[in-house]
Amino acid sequence: MGLILSTLNNPFFVTLKEGAEAKAAELGVELIVLDSQNDAAKELSNMEDLLTQGVDLILINPTDSDAVGNAIKAANSAGVPVITLDRGANHGEVISHVASDNIAGGVMAGKYIAELLGGTGNVVELEGIAGTSAARDRGQGFNDALVGTDITVVAKQVADFDRTKGLSVMENILQAQPEINAVFAHNDEMALGALTAIEVSGRDIIVVGFDATDDAVKAVEAGKMAATVAQQPNLIGALGVEFGLKALSGEQVDSYVPVELMLVK
Image 1 (cartoon, helix red, strand yellow):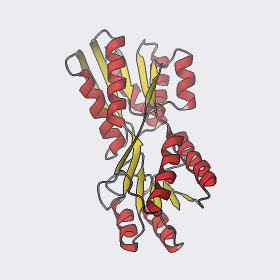
Image 2 (cartoon, helix red, strand yellow):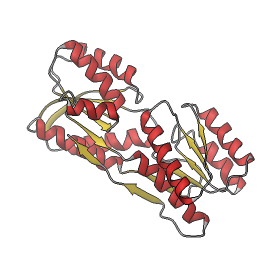
Image 3 (cartoon, one colour):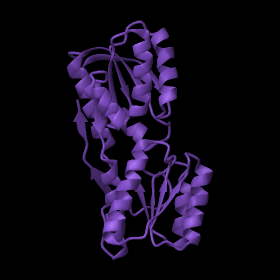
Image 4 (cartoon, helix red, strand yellow):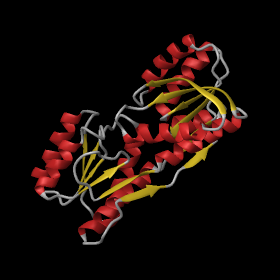
């Protein structure tokens, strides 16, 4: 079985990999892991490498939901089944998609911010990589949760799931917006970057992230971040391997396997 990850430069995907490796070891599955380094061209060559090595099934965490289509079509042509993990694919045939219910997670974050603000105030939304299903779904859930409140999204900017970009984007927003009560970031890396910018500015702003990475959970425990939506990346990886093995043994697998979320606050 092959596992192609969008990046190993993000602790979330490292944990996903570890979950997959542990489950593979437990079930006696040989797992070859490759890193696409957030590059769709590298992703395609990783796919070609695995197909050349003759793997039976491929688990892929796409760099981009559109761009991954070429890699998936290569597997389709070779008759090798594909399961997507965490991010979905917009093109090509996959037998299953294992992911957190990102819309539900976005709703969770939005409702908690609305509760903390008493249903009124100004919020900023830091968006993940444009074109990823995770960014789209978390944003949708968050904005859905604010319907019917007096909360206004005063700024919405892409910071690519990246801490450094989260910092620089937030610095600019802080200069442009005198009145901000809360920030929702589509992942913890951006939330932590935004938190640094907010701390430097000396302003008192609620920050909610997504992923429950170690650094973010520490920030929540220290009272610096209000909350983070916990995904279970290890479980996403483990379920990918488990359902992959089921599919290979001829079982019918669900086209979507939702993985539970919880709010760490």
